[in-house]
Image 1 (cartoon, rainbow, N blue to C red):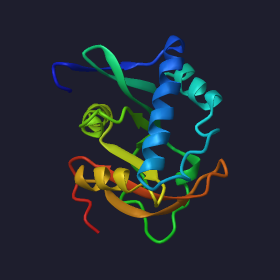
Image 2: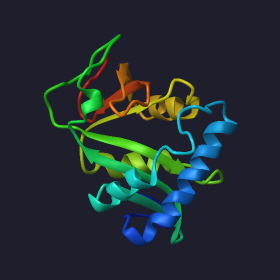
Image 3: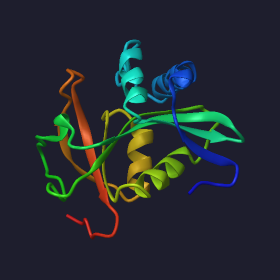
Length: 174
């Protein structure tokens, strides 16, 4: 699933301070890479991260036992994905999971590969969205075989996002 030195665990309430630190690290990475608008100082909120943990949907990637990344892995449907413009989902029937709130330490490399390997071992149909200024995430998704599907509008008032999908084992070429 991951390298012998990396493991993935479900986060617990005791991990919330570490999750908050990783989110802040992710926010700084976004800002320094030209994406200052995706996450403001209140998003993702502590309440959202607490809900992710309480629902068993928050994860940590550990390297030699030290947390280097966090994300939420959530079974669909996701209300923000109900409507898409400028494109379409490759499959709008099969159950899917969603990856949200990915953040890591700046020195951590290969994080998205480990996260996706784990997530695809649990669900073959994954959707994810990102801000149009998040060039790092867009690059990671395309490199990982995701396909751009269109634009979704976040239901929480967070604006529009570029939406991607990958279904392992299916040809998803447009």
